[in-house]
Image 1 (cartoon, rainbow, N blue to C red):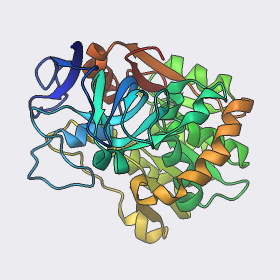
Image 2: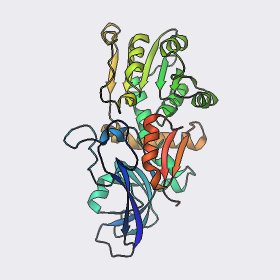
Image 3: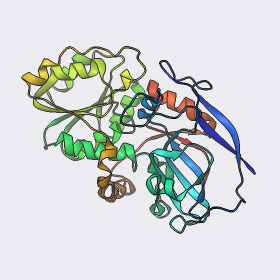
Image 4: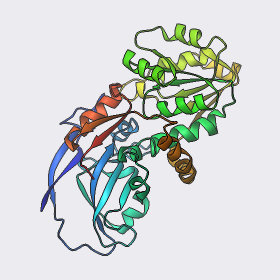
Length: 348
């Protein structure tokens, strides 16, 4: 038997989750030498992804939403990258690298996976052995966050060269990709972030940006977009979204990806400028990337070489050890991360 720490959803939080109360670590064990039933295999989990949508899963299971609630007292799930240690399944061979899909990869040090669960939850990604990219990229820029950025900007934003693009949370897992793709497509791109250090980082890769915490957002939008905003990639909500309605151009497109400023509030902030949706004939469209998994092969084919060549830069904020998972998620929810937040559990 070997130790097998697991990340457990222990309590429904009020406001921001609390490490050690709402998210806890369970000290369990697993027998790596036991015979496996037909179709089963054992994974050594290497990297976990923590993402804003996970806060919405920390709710009463009776409340329905696009992503299932975490079952109380059970192991949490999300994007993972793992290696197969032992297998009785021909589709998952020893030493295969395996991606645990969004909301399905198990947050524990080792996982025994059945054939039935694997069919919808785990995908072999052995190209990671050959292209030199970090395994952590496979839970971020080459997973749900990257595909979210790539699909939504092109399919909802419908960008045209010379248009303007405003990206909130522009240094985060999704916003960082949106900003660079927009720039490559010939858009006038400006991002907002929550610290001067993040502003400087974006500027270092050619993206104009401002600190929304230390500046008047209304004034900055007027300064950076004197001719208005054509496309807004929305990840914040609240006052930020309200002001974009004011600065949007006629026939502008608002890509509603997330509203992180609202996730931990008991009472959501009101929005006042909604008449602009009518007057300016705006398109405001929400989406869930899991509705578009048929796009994944095309996305991986196009994005992987952009990363390998260095045309797309990606920044990661790595926490060490499975015990850091709760604090890592809280950092993301508070905006204290610097790039895509991942938790490294073990080396390959």
